[in-house]
Image (cartoon, rainbow, N blue to C red; front, side, top):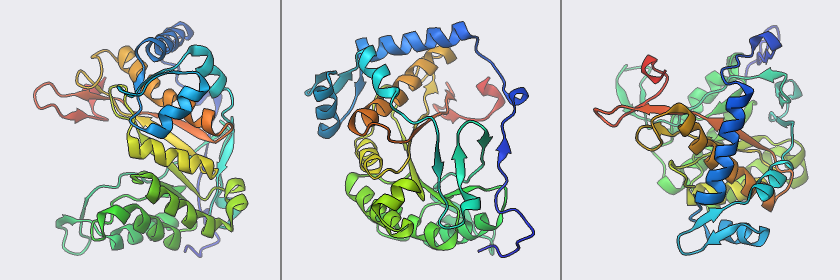
Length: 311
């Protein structure tokens, strides 16, 4: 752990009005919103989870259990989303100065990735990543004030595949005081073990709800589909009071329409349909929104992200 008290442990970035870039007009936003409502009500989203389907059906959504398609009436959607909290925290392990406050006044940088390979720091050669790499990167992140929370940069490929997420969580919890994020929990059973680990760190179930030392984000599947393991894990985390985020990554021209506006509608529908499920099941559960579209390379089918071609 970092022991130099003269340096800040994290450096939040204060959000100022002049920092905001408004690309879409209010009219544009409303068009995307209305198109999203139409997609959810008329086309629907596939939820390959019996548990999720039953929750939606009991709430009044139109559920086809054979096709696993859920069509969500606009009033059910908006009423459910209105229950999501407008602010909450990502708690650190102990030091409250490391808590991250999500209330619209600050933003934070963290690590990301869970790649399966790394460049060895000794040999400079590419190799399969290991749990030791996850531990080492957690230690480095703990020292860097530019990193406010830790998500495994690479995955622990040297442990049994079914429990990789649990080994990554252990590596994070032991080697940094900062908030931990997971994105690799693949099914409900593993999620329950992850919750037990978080309870142990936080000091019990109620302590975890007050100070969630862990959050999880789940990727949707474009176009208009949820992942069974991901959505069922999200329900487990939400029940425990752990913040859950949903990330859509449509590929324009491949898994989404070629226009950005249309891709935004598809991604938005995926994300808020998942958020709707969580709020129906556990009203007031902390959730967050992540949308990262990419452009499909028509020559290779590759996902172009963060490149000039994207715009």
